[in-house]
Length: 117
Image (cartoon, rainbow, N blue to C red; front, top):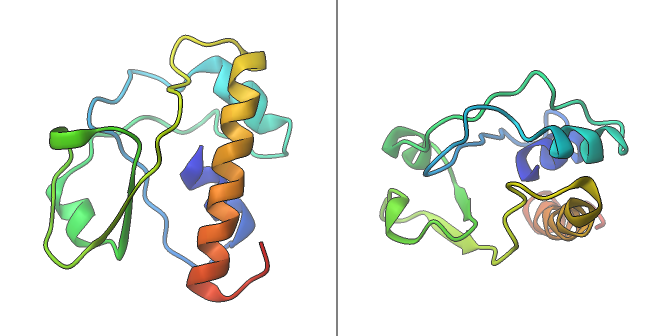
């Protein structure tokens, strides 16, 4: 959700990657539903494994509780966003998670490229 929201709010302004330490086999259908409510289509996305190369190619790495499972690269900025995992939750429980991710994405974007949040 964070990558899709960032790409939505800043198309072309930042390069966005999305990956997880233990990715699911498909995007949660309830996540597809709540993102579509914002006009963001993630139905064609697919979960990918977080690699050392992806971390090394990034300026900012946002984790959501992966702990030691996430690759670490010296000199990178890491932000750990302590949020509920939407896995297995229905849309009504994912909406507040989505909204909190959106708030954090807007704040980060404002900091990175000087756009209002």
